[in-house]
Amino acid sequence: MAEEKPPADAKVDEAAAAAAAAEAAAAAEAMRPIIRKIIVEDGHAGAHGGAWKIALADMMTAMMAFFLLMWLLGASNEDKRKSVADYFRPASHSQIVFGEMAGSNGLFGGKSIIDTDGFPFTAKQTAMLERLTPQAQGGPAESFGSSKEENNKDGPSDQDPGNQGAGTPSQKQDKENFEKLEKDIKQKLSESKQFDNIKDQVSITREKDGLRIEVIDKADFAMYASGTAEMGGKAAALMSEVAKSLKPLPNKLAIRGHTDSLGFAPDSMRNNWTLSTERADATRQFMQSQGISANRFSRIEGVADTNPKVPNNPADARNRRVSITVLNQ
Image (cartoon, rainbow, N blue to C red):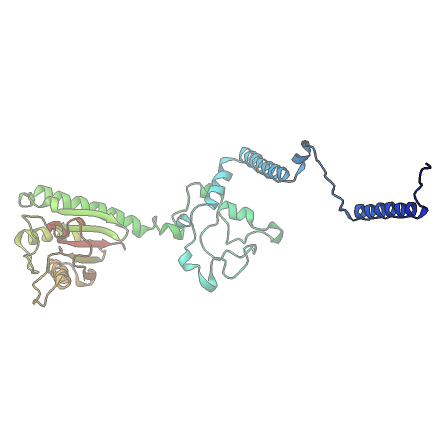
């Protein structure tokens, strides 16, 4: 029996199907996304950023400034270093009185800092200010910056406003008078037997306004009777000696009364303010009766218990006292 052959149409269909499948596969392959995987190997390229350059630049700048400072210190003498120190001195030690140099006539009088006439004050300039004045504009005027470096070695001079005239004749005279007054009062108290028990109640202190003499109460001694402005006998004898020592001096006097914190009865019309003022005025009247002129008294005031000598115990007897300040001329 003879073998049967597939018809010719069947072969054509298989070829067409194969071609269609191949075409579909090609189309699908063309639509597939392309994914690329890039692998970077670790190496030394990560250190090539710019951050280290900034750090290095900062370090080099700091080192340059440090070595420049060392060179300047080594090349300058002691006078120049003193001038630099004076230039950076705090304002509390400045040679300029800022209270008088403010506003429209301020520190530079409304002028630029580089103006050669921009320093309208009578105080001497430091040597540093003289060096900073632009020399191209003729330098400082004759009336300004006339100081030399040796004049700045010990800070502001006696004539500087910031030194408050410590070297003026009146200040020197006050110093001598205060020293003599303190010595005289202490000597009188130590030589007299009637003051043996109360001589320690007299305190003499130097302060910015002058010389303060305080008569302080204690448990067994009161300058005034309790709640009154009547001076006791011992207190009167003590104040008489103080007045004799004060009488020859030309200085004006300021008297201040102090009390403790113990008050008056609620229905009383009096208080510690009036009591302290009355005691201060009673002291003035007594000293005036001892020969001190009335025009010597500058002010009389009472501060009640607002300024206690023993803050931890406002009721302490030592808070009751009278202060006599011999004012500076």
